[in-house]
Amino acid sequence: MKRFKLIFHIVYVVIALVIMYFSVDILLNTEQYLSKIKLSSYIKFPRYVMGLFLFISILMVIEFVIQQIKIHGIKSGVEELKEEIKDLKAKLYDKSQEELEISFDDVDKGDEELDDDED
Image (cartoon, rainbow, N blue to C red):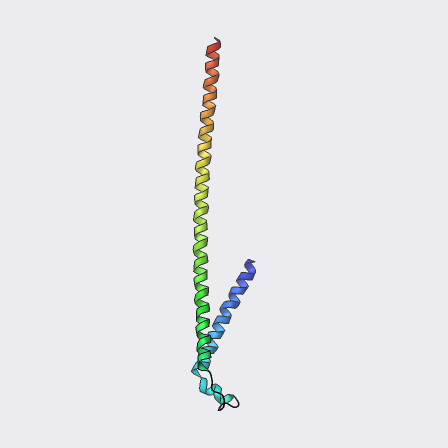
């Protein structure tokens, strides 16, 4: 799944960059492209479509960057939580060891008291 995501992200960014490049190119060189197209006098070139493609491709890039920032933030949060869990486990282990020592001490004292009572 990670390999698919990596390939998908690369394709996603490449497509966005290609759309931006050609949109800007067509917007800047509209007259040259219209002279190459047959029946150009009858067809009004829709400049708003290229503007829309440019806008959508910019949104794609912004969305990708924001998504990557969000993923990085979530991963760092997970690492912090893992550290906190490890600390809590260590405290719990220390506390259980202390309780075992106390219970062994009580058993030893109880054995000594029984030995004293028998005498």
